[in-house]
Image 1: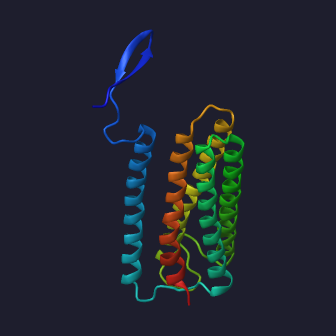
Image 2: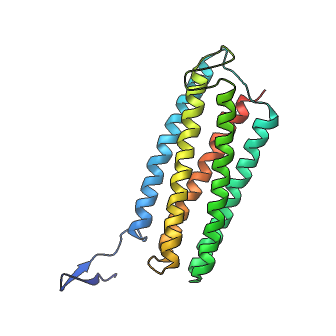
Image 3: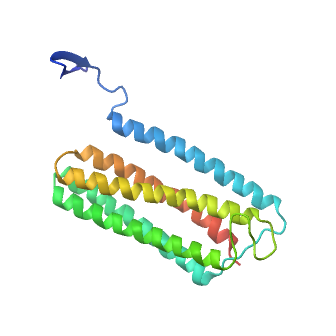
Amino acid sequence: MAHPQVTMHGGHAAALEPSPFGMSSKKLVMWLFITADAATFGAILFGYGFLRAAAPDWPRPFEFSPTILNGLVMTFVLLTSSLTMLQAVAASGRDDRPGTARWMGVTILLGALFAFLHLREWFKMFAEGWGLHANPTGGPVDFGASFFSITGLHLLHVISGLVALAVVAILFRRGRLTPNHIETTGLYWHFVDLVWMFVFPLVYLMNAH
């Protein structure tokens, strides 16, 4: 039988019941957040699919070069960042704080490269006349609204993840956080990568001509 943990609070001993889920509260909260966020992305992608199927003149503006090729590079960069994040988690498990910080630094650089490539693609499309309510081909404006909304939401997650990775890496290097914090942050980053594996084929590849 599991025994309650005892901690000191305000000079008095207080009993803390062990987690009934066999994981830390931080990791449990992250899993709950990921579940809710996955439902949000699922609903948005479902709505996008409905709009696309209902529009007979849905535009397919993306060519293999440079748009799809750029998307493939972005996918490779993001998947590689998942591997470096795994290395950071492994290093933290060995209590290798400098190594953890280095691997997280590489992950941050790869994530920043992904964001740069993404924004470069956006500005290229803006220059061509695309926008939330603009379609230079004369087709439905729903394409621009859905494209920039979906990819923008994912990009927001990437940028938020980069900030979280930087803060956690610095605090872990200073000894103020534990390996559990690294693992929990890694769960979020892997989720961001997984979402892109749905966004890229649905929003990019299916709109290639």
